[in-house]
Image 1: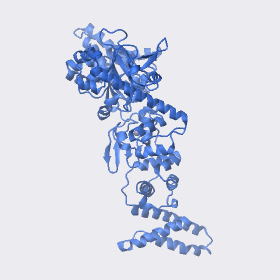
Image 2: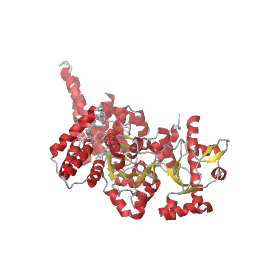
Image 3: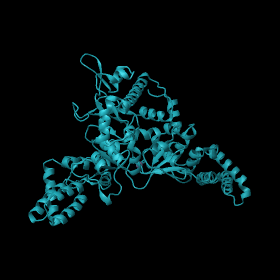
Image 4: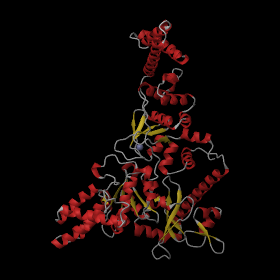
Length: 621
Ligand SMILES: [Zn+2]
């Protein structure tokens, strides 16, 4: 079921993996391959390799591997069909389906995107020129400071009043509008517009398809201030982030994503030069968003007043840091300001606040101590107590200790007193079960943080993130590994020269066998057992600049020596009267082995001949 194999192969052939991966991560060319920091596990030195020509990647750190389809699946959390569809769209390949249901589903999604695209264009046109949108235009210009460029860049729209203007204007069958979340059916069975008299912020998925919109009332309008698309098959607010389609590149480039609360905050941050801004769509930041974001960056900066969220939020953040191996920071915005306003009044302060974002605990302590009266002993003691309570909530003992020292400094209380207080609070919390989930007394489950972090565990797998496994113990090495590399990268140089008998390692053997039986590397990888597939994937991203002739000589030499040892041991075990029977073969084998490495270049043709006959003999043995 799904897309016909031939079309999948066409998509693979038409897709440039380097370009696809490059949209999610920075890749640097090293020789014939590309390397970068692995998007599937946390690392500081690049072990993620891409072979552009073969369209395969392999991570030497976590063992993540695959082709463009696997990459898109894991990066964007798509199923196989969705990933192929996405790449097909990109490469301009038309897909055929071998079952009616898959085809229908695909057709349905495609129709929703098309319907939304037409609606976005229609609403946008209304905002730009319709007389009834004059108030909206005025609001955007005066209250928000948006010029025409901003309105066009974000494709803002105006949903007019009236019952069914969109339904009548769009020329799309009304049920399709309902599917796309643009219309509903009223009590009398008539199709009516979902958005009416609202300013529209169209929402696009990371890949750029429109999936819905957020509608804002103009000041003085009736109803809830915001109304978002609801309940369609392409709009899932629990894993959707407004602005990611525009921010993606900046996010990947900087390794940082800035999360704010509203559409206008995103636009404000972008306009203030912080291109990495995204926002949740009418919902609180949740696991699904963080998981989505870890595909693009490891640092998440929260650009909203997180102080109010308090300890419940802190536990969330610590949990995300541990589970998703992300670094959560908070931008200290001036009190009672949001990014949208600050972007207009003081864009530099906004950009600076994001730049100077700090860990959540540091941010909360700073707020607390700034409010405290540290001028007298009573005030300092109270501040020390509240601050220590905050510190006690952090799951990592080393991190707690550092903050204890700061609090001790600021409040003039001995660090040992504060430490004892913090541990007492933790014991209390643990026995009450309140924070036991994130705070095992010993800090056992805590991820080491700070400069001593080292290699963090690949939390993604446990959290249901990208499928990463430990690399299998692959021990193929030396000429056997090099020969496989040449066979994969420059097959013409070893065609008709390699034989399975030349490989001693069982894995190398099976890799070679499956390679010889397949017409393409992809076919071979698909046909291979998991360990062999792993080896082939790895070989595919490894450089191979070794000389094929040299590899052949070393490989044949080794195989010849193994055969010689076997012959000699057979000979020793044989009846002394029969031993003479082995002598000619042993002598020939020794001579042939010597001929493999001629000192005089003029003997090269003879060496090649020796190689051929030795391989022939090994095969027939
Ligand atoms: Zn990796």
